[in-house]
Every structure is written in structure tokens, then in C-alpha cells.
Image (cartoon, rainbow, N blue to C red; front, side, top):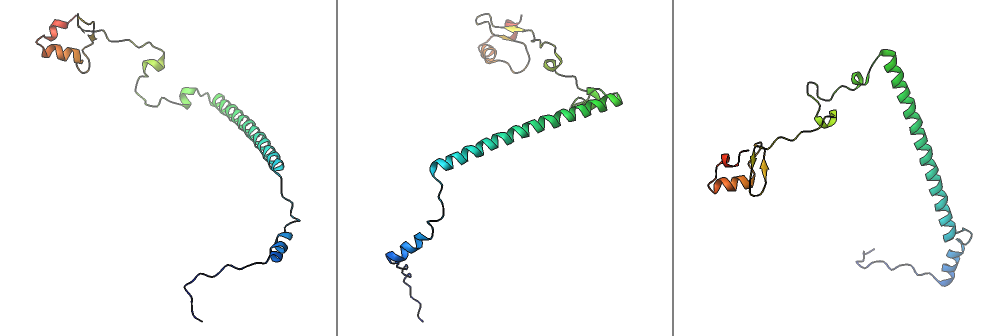
Length: 143
């Protein structure tokens, strides 16, 4: 038997054979578009109900856990600082977190022409660097 390089021809069915093949699927009911939409809505409602049940269960378990923690803290005389110590011991908390107001550093240098100020901390501002390059001294801007 010689192998041919040509692809095999697809089988040819007669009209009677094709009709007989489709007749076997007539008994299988096909859902209509409306039925599929109704099934989808029912599944979405079921999903929403399950999500509500999950949320209620999580809330209930969370409340139980909080009650257990409070009971243990009371039993052993613990405070919140005992249970959750500061994240970095030995460091003072920042002013924002401790409720104190943050104070700005007073300006030490001022440009009388523009009103720009500099506290003397950090890099010199561009206006001051340009003025010093133009021949003025830092003391010319001192307050």
C-alpha cells in the first residue's frame, strides 16, 4: 500500500444520512434565551445570598475572637501596650502620631526683594545661591 501525499477527502453524506443524524438530537431539549437569562439571574441571587452569609459568619467569628482576647487580657491584667508594643522600642513617636503640633523652624535668612526665606537647614535655595554668585554674602540676608 503506497502512501499518498494528498490529504484524504472528507466523507460525503447523503441528504438522508444527514437527516437521520440530526433526528437523533430532536429529543434533547434546548434551553431558550429567556430560560438561560432566568437561570443566570437565579445563580446571581444565590451568589449574593452566599456572600451575605459569608459576611455574617466573618462578623460573628470576629466578634467572638475580640471577646476571647478581651477576656484573656482581663484575666491576666494586660493592657494594649503589653499586647502591641511600639514597633521600634527606644524611639519617640512622631509628633503627628502623638497628638503634638508640628512646629516649623524659624527662618534665619530672608530675601528683602522677593520675601523668600530659608531656615539655614538643608541645601541652600536657588535664590540664595544665585544671589551669592552675584556678589552678595550670606550675612546680607541674615535676619
